[in-house]
Each structure stands twice: as C-alpha cells, then as structure tokens.
Image 1 (tube, one colour):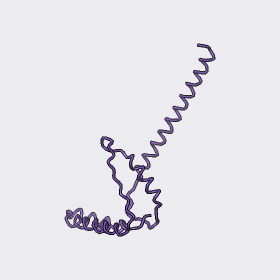
Image 2: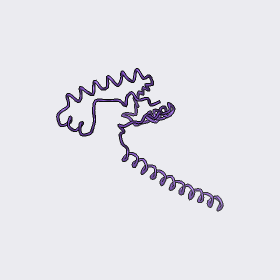
Image 3: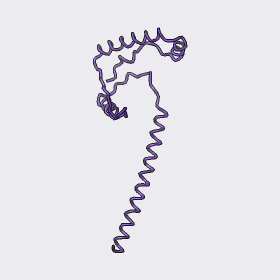
Image 4: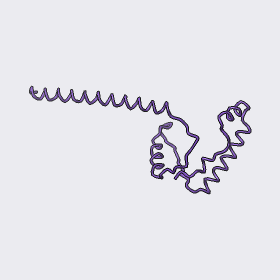
Length: 130
C-alpha cells in the first residue's frame, strides 16, 4: 500500500469516527428529548371547538400504525367518524355504559371519580373536530 493511500485511508477513518460521534450525540439528544416528551405527556379531557384538518388526523393515524405491539402484529383499526348523527349515537351508548360502571363501582372509587370530576357524560365525543 502506498503512503498516500494509507494517509487517505486514515483520514477517512477519522472522518467516519467523527461522524459516528456526532450520530451518537444526536441519538443521545433524541433519546433525552423523547424521554422528556414521555414524562411530560398528559391526558387531555377538556377539548376546544377548534377544528382539526382531516389531513392532520390522517398523519396522526399514520404515526400510530407504527406503534410497537406484541409480536409486532400491529393490530390497530382506526375508525374516523365525521357524521354528527353517528357521533351522537356513539356518545349516548358510551354514556349509558359509563353510567352503569359508575353505579357498580366500589364506594372508594365513586368518591375518587367525584373528586376528580369524572362523570359518565361524554360531551367531547360529539364535538366537531374537523
């Protein structure tokens, strides 16, 4: 091997090492950012009337398709309901089931639900999102 070739090869190895170091730092930064997002994630139970473009809904669903699952089978089925009459029927049925749950719940759970302001009402199921 010529001396020039060895110098070029060494330079390439050094550059690759620097790229790997940058990639490793970037990966660590992304892991930290993801962990922060996961720690700060909250369930939202108060919804606005602001409409969401259907395209955004599709992007969210597309991301959800890649969520991890047992044996990587990803058995997700998403149903987007835009018909207001159907939303109303879904809301009524959900509230009926929720009322039964609240009625049969142990007293301690009933108290906790009341303290949290959690009721069988599911008004958010009928709000127009798009």
